[in-house]
Image (tube, rainbow, N blue to C red):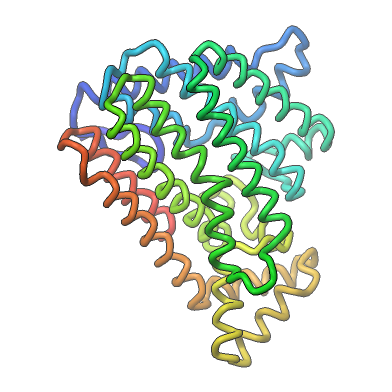
Length: 336
């Protein structure tokens, strides 16, 4: 048994391992090529997060989904480059919106060069992804455009917040389906589609990706509270400091409204205070780490991962299916 990709995913079949490793290596070359510019400064900024590394979660899914058709088909690697470039571009923009100081263990682009350069670099990556996408055909362009619309809609809904009377947890899960689930679903869809897999297989893998993407983001929510910077690659409690209502916080507020316990209400009041103060932020982080709301968020993560696993049931048994199922376990493991 060997290890490949993010989270120490085990791949039991040597041929599958070789295909996935070769595909990911080709994606890495494609990312570096796609982020080159005639202007050296643009190359430096565009390759900042590429060279910082990362899990390459979405390209891995493209490679595994392609196993259900011809994994060597010419569109497989370029489509993986497209989804990773799109993901990277959103990170540049997210860090500006969140005023994040660290990304993937290095200073964020906005910290290093300022917000304007970070936003424009993200735009540059979107443009390069679009160029590659144009060569993959009109259906690929349509699929990516719809996913990108969902991604942006999710971001807008997060910024606007839930409408009056809407359950904040349901609203947030809808946000994640757009912000994260859409691009992870497209990763699976592209892999299957570009490999020439049967349309029913493409649909199954797309549904799997949607649910896995939400589970993946929920695991990140848990990590933002529970991990240290070494584990997550960014400053713990970043979302907390910025007042972004991730699932552990939403579960806390839900519990406080339902039970009215004094300690829950007090913690909500602490979260509503100015958490730019380091001592107050540390107090809030410690309290959330010990609160049942964090465990509830973990259970929510498990639920979505189990739904992703269940979506794979119609697929024929093969090593790629086993690897996709193990990814569900790996995502849950990240959340503890």
